[in-house]
Length: 360
Image 1 (cartoon, rainbow, N blue to C red):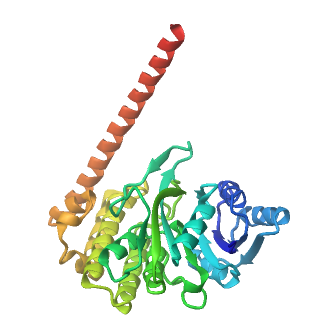
Image 2 (cartoon, rainbow, N blue to C red):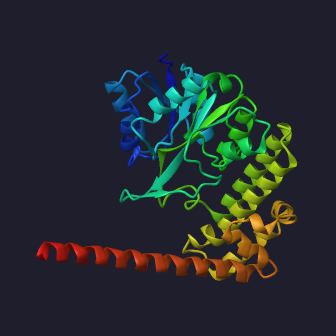
Image 3 (tube, rainbow, N blue to C red):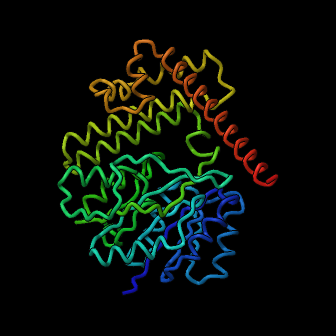
């Protein structure tokens, strides 16, 4: 069997990274591909790069459209997909040369609707860093065919990204679309709906996707309050998807926890990403956020023992929110400084060992 895979890549302002992404896709060891490049009204040279690659590879189809956001671009790709399987890639990331071959072989052998795998992250210096698993990591493939089991759901939703799963087109086309009214966490909302449309999936611990860390990501490049309200809107949409899917109450609690952690990240990381904000402005933003109904709602019945460290500290100090935010930020700066010093010391040690070896 040699089923066609439709690879959907939304493209917007990624001219610096697009070629690396496209090279990783067109050079896949699995060749029966339809590669859909959706130019979402990109103002840079990304659209021209897409056309250039399409002129050299007849598997590539370029869709030029007005800017509508990543969800709109992905929906355009879904509508144009002709493959039996669908796979999403973000245009500033990369995949392993055998990603699609491995996934399609596992999908056919296990007779599943979806294959889920792991990812890592890398920076401009090509330093690859494993991401901490959000579900217990296995050293072997696991078949999940009882989707009513909470462990199955926890595995499936552990990473919200749609870029770490290959799914049957019949599970998506004509049945699902990305929510174009939200601009963050849209993958999580989509995966909640997708889970209702599959009967089984296979998890493999193989790292087949590389997520690029850039200083210009949406979370660092956006007005802080806009980012918060976007995440709040996503939280509302995700809760609605959970309720519509009749998921267990524990899933709602999980989403409340994830939302609280995201809100705290906005206050303790993104708030300090803008040098133009003074103390009074930061103070105003902090009180604006914590006095919203959605923040109060998600923080009212949380079990702090399951929160990440940042959110846990904030929860314990929430009676003094200004102090909590500045304390967490100071702690992060201190830990980052320690990591930098340790990295430099390791580098000097390695250089010293190299010199000693050469002298001998």
